[in-house]
Length: 221
Image (cartoon, rainbow, N blue to C red; front, top):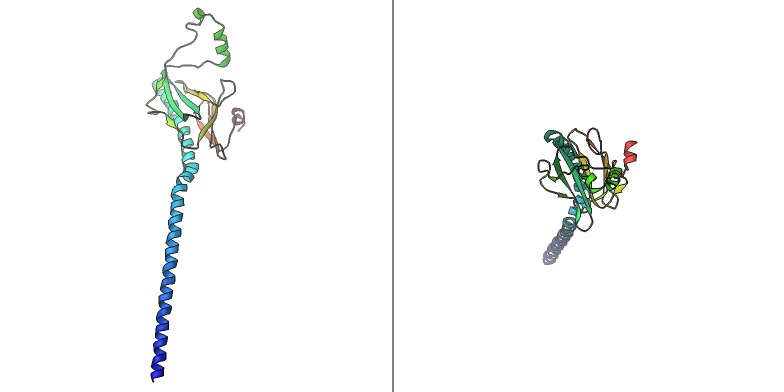
């Protein structure tokens, strides 16, 4: 009997040791999982904003600009003003856009008209070029909008001008008669994402294409 009791005692001790080892092993596994989750959480906290900006936020910014052109056209017709979209492309100060307006119908001169104007004397030039003061159009936009980080204006092409503007400020106008500049606005992340906003001169409607297109290519769509 003594031997049997001693054997049972050893078995019980052995079983308790196994249970303790299993608990310890499980405890270490949970700790390791928690550490891994904490590391993943930290990585996501840093990377998530960038991923969000690269995708959703950029697309939202492009759509917002496209939709706003409709408001600019309506504003021009309703208040008898020339509304213009001012697009600033400056890698040092940032890429942004603003909405300005001037009373009445203000036609910006074409390249040929400007050359003809330069040939006139100062006396002849007076009254030949209608002067207008453009101011912030708060009924459409309260203040200039800066593009989200990583998104840039790649260029602006307007039918009444020669070539594409890729730096400085470019203007797209909307007249009181409901007409607009025929133009394309190119936006890019300078990596793999590209958008083109094409503005119809008769309706002012803006169509968005998820690739870069020239004015000539848009006409062929």
